[in-house]
Image 1 (cartoon, rainbow, N blue to C red):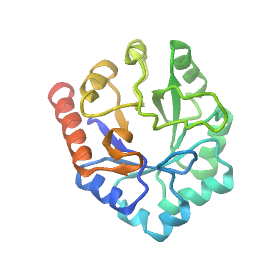
Image 2: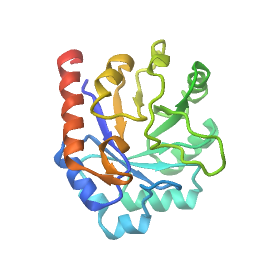
Image 3: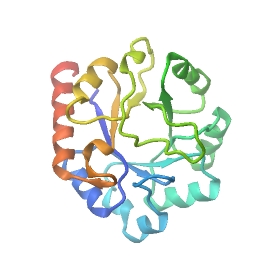
Length: 220
């Protein structure tokens, strides 16, 4: 099984093109605020994001979305998966899965082993997990794309196989992240940007090459 690499926070057509040229498996589009990478559904639709990215997984990223916003946004990119970064309960995750008919990735901020135990309640309602650095609990705080790593050793006793890791990943630490956590996939955003919200093709290409080469040599 190969390592899945997701480039997240794509807000311009050229971001999609450079990610695909670099070999990305999955593309993430953020339909939540606040974030320098927030994508307007209308902009995505008018600029044919779904056609540009039609050969890879297209993930719509949300934080406690209302149904109308959720449906409008996934239609704009013809999403193939949904990623939830808010306080969505297992029941709400199941509702979203039923409404959309799409697989669900549920994100968890990790600051202690107690945070990992929360996944136990979601086994029947989501398809994949994503472990990220823990965001602030203040109202309207940004939930992802924080450009900071969590303590990967907290995952050493994690028995899950269907998870991604995120949070502060870049070309300098991605090998350590893979070695310590052995995820099914990695999710990067700020680590392949030249400034917040602006992707850089060389950074994307180098990141993907480094991660894939290491994984193939050691785990395939």
